[in-house]
Amino acid sequence: ASSLISLRSSSSSGLSEFVDAKIELQDIYQDLDKFISSLMITVEGSNLLDEAEEQQQMEQLRCFSSKVQAIEKVMSRDRMKVAFFGRTSNGKSAVINALLHDRILPSAMGHTTSCFCLVQATADEEDPEHVRVEQENLHLELGALKELASAHSPRAMKPSTLLHVNMPRSRCRLLDYDVVLLDTPGVDVTAQLDDCLDRYCMDADVFILVLNAESTISRVEQQFFKDVASKLSRPNLFILNNRWDMASSQEPEMELQVRDQHIERCLKLLIEDLGVYSTVEQARRRIYHVSALEALQLRNGCNQNPTVPTQERYLEFQRFETDFSNCLAHSALKTKFEQHLLSALDILAQLEATLIGPLTSKLGQLLKETGEEANKLYAEINDQGLRVVQRKEELEDQVEKLCEEAQAMGQQVLR
Ligand code: GDP
Image (cartoon, rainbow, N blue to C red; front, top):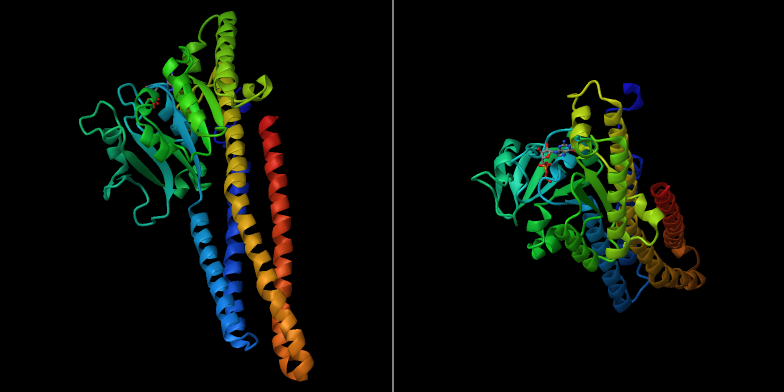
């Protein structure tokens, strides 16, 4: 029976496309940076422009150069962020642990998360696994997390604290794909921390609401997401009815009835209350019934003989994982990279219009007057002009490809 499920699998096709696109885009920008430097050398050494013109052109090139370098920096930091919300003990940390295939965050009765925890891969080879308290230069071992982030520990941090949980890239696939996961204190606490919400959560690409399938959505949870939705235009929201193993261990007819009730309430939240989806069909695809605890146990080898219902719940967890990964990559490609591609295109278009065009025509005139002398320079500038045009065409192709990819991924998510 266990052939039904693949225990180690993690859906990541969309995420690997994000990482590939990031590498490609970084190459484009590095190339652009070198290209602008070589144009600067040409302009300075050409004697084609009078002093004022040369100064103006150099000023513009320097301005492009610093813009390109700034975007390169932003791009190297670009990551996809997923924020998890829900009432205390609904299993937010358990869901994150299941996604990471490991018990990283404290998740147990009496060990619920008391502050914001950002789980991410670190580039620090010397100190790959540690906890850092935001605004304090305090590095602690991963083991300290249990005390720092547990609501009932005497060393518990203030709810507004942000803990950076740094892991080596190799530890889990999801982090290697430049995904960061944000665990939050229960919504009842988080709702009172309006400034933290703005600071830590509003830039999330995807939001995951973790509900307890043994009860019903609370008013605090509904109100909380209404607030989030009013701040964001259309939050990308998934709803997990977690602890489904506990809730569904009843008569089969009851199970169906409870499931239908959850779905009805979640649909109301997504469509009527939040207005993030317009049709039942779209909203329905964002609602899942899972058991994070079982998913983690299967993934870390603690359950070698899963029952059929456990396997079914695990398949549902994997379906959630695939959908949210694709949605995440899709949204990050659109919101982050499209902008960078368009900026690169804009720089090239401006270079063509204000520098290469006038330089080429000046050279044409000079050639007429001086004959052979200017040939080498002409060839050089002509060559650079051609590279600008070629680069622009390549980038236009990239933008088109990106839009197609984003659209295809969007359809995958909807299917
Ligand atoms: P959080 O406060 O939302 O982060 O909740 P935790 O992840 O700490 O989970 C609270 C408790 O519920 C822990 O004891 C978990 O082991 C347990 N738990 C979490 N998810 C599930 C689940 O799907 N099924 C069952 N049976 N227990 C779960």
